[in-house]
Length: 429
Picture 1 (cartoon, rainbow, N blue to C red):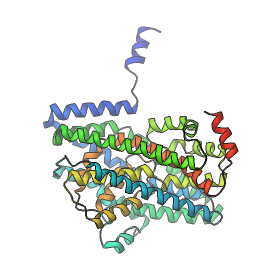
Picture 2 (cartoon, rainbow, N blue to C red):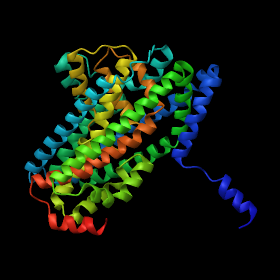
Picture 3 (cartoon, rainbow, N blue to C red):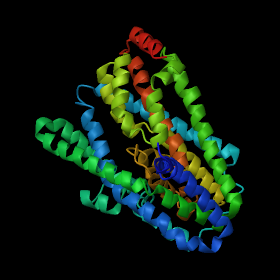
Picture 4 (tube, helix red, strand yellow):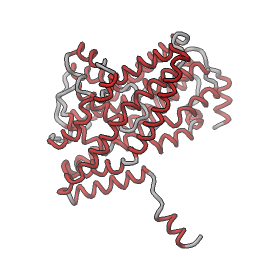
């Protein structure tokens, strides 16, 4: 290999997206410390990145939920399995959300920060307001009514997460009952899903730009003390997710007669892909194939895994709980019991269908904050800079939860082949 080829390979090769984000974070940190006067000049970088995410996330969310429901098969033939799956999903997400809120309160996450909202921060986060503004108006009846769009197009035009989800669930259930008549529309939805997935990949390639602007703004406006506390927020979240995977999910596997260590090794390739891409969408077919191969009945895999990708978002629930308490403490906001209860309900509902969409957690968090209006929504800007790193643990936590859920439901339904599971896991250890 000649010198020119070696130089090109070593120095001109484009670094990975993760490396680009790390570099952008360091540059933003340095820029915010030494050149704070230029922070306002780079504000547009984060604004563009966030607006592009909001632009593409509605149609993609609709397609993902519809295809998940259609792929589950006839709900009439798997009624009991569907009910048990939903009970497990809701029970698990509710428990981890409550646990995350309690842990964040006990640790006093964010109490040392004194955040003061600025007009620029409010303008930056205003793009999320349309998807959350109606969640807290009109009391409980207003909350229920706000889930239903005036027209299907208005939900997408406003970027309203709950309304898009409602329309997607209704469409998916109806398409399930239409059979072959609805096949052309299902094919169209699949094509649209591929289109917006590619658009989202293009948008995510701009993540370093958005992270650079957000980190520089955060450092310039709130100082290194805030950055250290944001690092503490990331560390707290990673530790909580690790504990959830090891003790909760590992405990469920042991109760079902499955070795957790062997189970993790069985999915080691998928774990690596999720870690590097921060999304579990790419490994969905592989998860279903491996679960069926290891001894989980096809009907269980076919319903629980696709439904879990929309409804079993344990790590996202943890993020919402921890983030809201962190922002409440950082802004000096006292949450009354009814405010906290409203926040929990909103977080559980708004998080449905948010899997695998980079940047979606910020939108859902904005919807959750809207249900507790005493917390300044502009404070959300503090978490934008670290959302990419949070997304790593969030993706792994959701991935692990959706690998374990079919095992739990299969054991509940007595549809596990334990001999085949032991043989498969021991072979792949």
